[in-house]
Length: 147
Image (cartoon, rainbow, N blue to C red; front, top):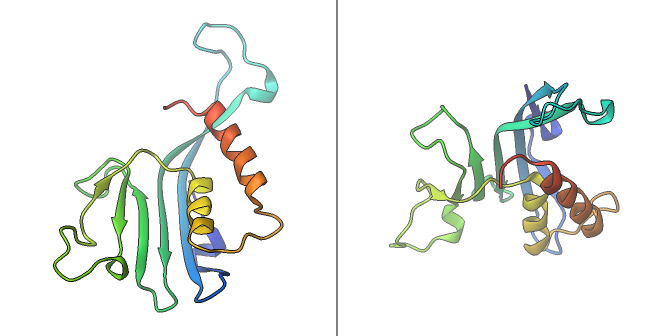
């Protein structure tokens, strides 16, 4: 299954200056688990686990220039690992990297991307306050099955 932010349309992020836009989609699978690795039954409240199978988080400028792209799309290209693209708006002519290069990174949570946007000057809404992101990220880290 895939879920996309804003039905796949870029979402405008407010800043003190020119806005950024975020496109985000996450591929996931819901798994039912009746017993843990130790064979003991799993409580009903913890029986279902959502596993991320891939994602595309792309931050762009007003004129659709990529700023950063956090991607993980196993099986779609030669690079199956989570990686980062640095957009041309960040690169000077003759830079040692290009926007096409895949810079290997660990898996990135959606909350991490929102935190990056705030570091870039995006003004958080009341719904996505830094404390909410921190709480959600802590919960995500507690239940993830990868490190």
